[in-house]
Image (cartoon, rainbow, N blue to C red; front, top):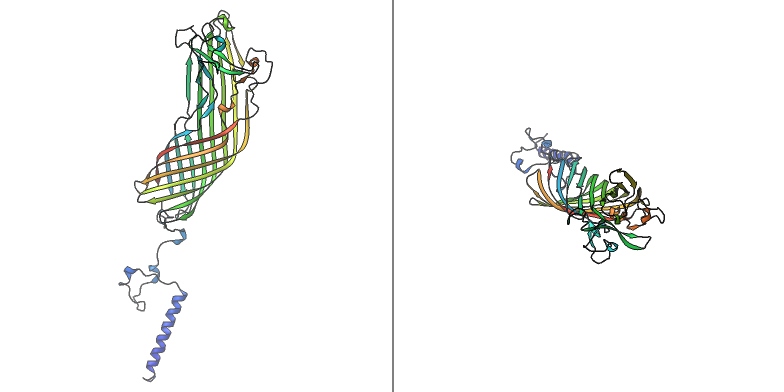
Length: 441
């Protein structure tokens, strides 16, 4: 090769080398070079060149992270499990019950004693809503992310609002001593035979000394199993889709106990005869259905806001139990005790246990304000409201229309009243505050 041709050869060789390098870059993966390594890295054309593969970004993009959709390291160090525990201070829609216990002032004639609508009659229990006071409860949520990217999760939740029970005692011997029949106590009802308001006396001078006790109870429970799917993320939070199963139970009970002793022949029974009567009304509502909802979380400088909205659609089974009995014990000598089915509001015409099923909707909405104490622990406070339709409540099952012939000891003739041929249904809601903690690990 002559020296004249050598410059042409060098130019040709340079073109071939450049073309080979370009083709290699196109067909292979382009190396990612960190800024801090630029000064230390040797030329790729020397024997000491650094392997390009060591400079590829180590983040695993397969986990699907974007913005705050991953609450930790996508490489596998994220907190996957979370638990929340809340104390509940809730209220529920009151249970409307009719007037069950009345009182009349001293000197009221027997024909007017305890009768609704008569001047001086005072309602001691009923005629309004009960079971609407605040009550305590507990709520627990447990969840587990199924991937490091926090895209899919499964969670279980449960809450219980504890039994709100009350007992109201009304005594006929509170003044004047035993045998006085004072104050005048009665149980009002509507007499269908006479088509008039009437009342049965539990305490009246020269007739009977007695007492009336009304006990009520109410409780609710709920459990659910949900799948959570990440929908959207932003620089301040995320939104998740919720879908799963919801169970809800609401139970109530109402019992009226009447105990009196005959103190005079005017009562129609032997003096000293003890009569114990009870009427019992119970309802149980069990909801099972599918649930769909959204959960949104927003965070800024350690503070957060969580919003929840869900709706469940399914079947509600309501069971109503009505029972009652009257026990009569005659005085000694020759004392006898006899128990007959039926009290006053629970008689042979309506004593039964019946069950029905209806379509029901259960929406729930909640909001919580959160404060991060550290990476794992969080304080929370919020508010929740839920509602349910087609609910059987004890107050709705009480029929004041009485055929007095059906009261134990009567002839049994006449219309079947009180009646209970079908469930009386209404809507129900519960709402209240919650205070608790949340942890993740």
